[in-house]
Image (tube, rainbow, N blue to C red; front, side, top):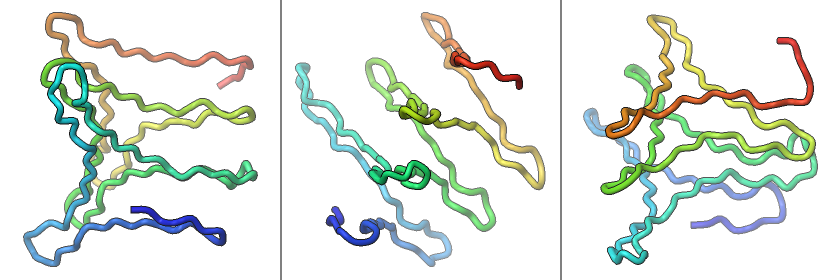
Length: 161
């Protein structure tokens, strides 16, 4: 599925929307993207699963204030009465060896900018406790638990805070 190239106005959008239900006990349709299975069981290779790559659109404009790259947004579903939908990111499981690694990072800046910031924030509440933030490593069996490392990058100017 693709939208063709145009030479006037905005590029064409692609909307993939699952079906709505008005039934009282049913769930709206889901959208599932699954990378291709590498089903060759030969030990020399060929059994590598396919990736799913989501990338915001490139911005080639020359205005360094408004010609920004496209965002990538993940948002759980809104609910009128019960809790809103969750957002879960997890790495892959292995039957035999290591689980996948996870990296959440902002990339280096260009020649005349600063790197992007990062926030880990829970929402405010109007009734009860706000959400908690947990930072922990897993248990090591036959070895130690993982480390938690925090570091501040170096700089070349001093600022009082």
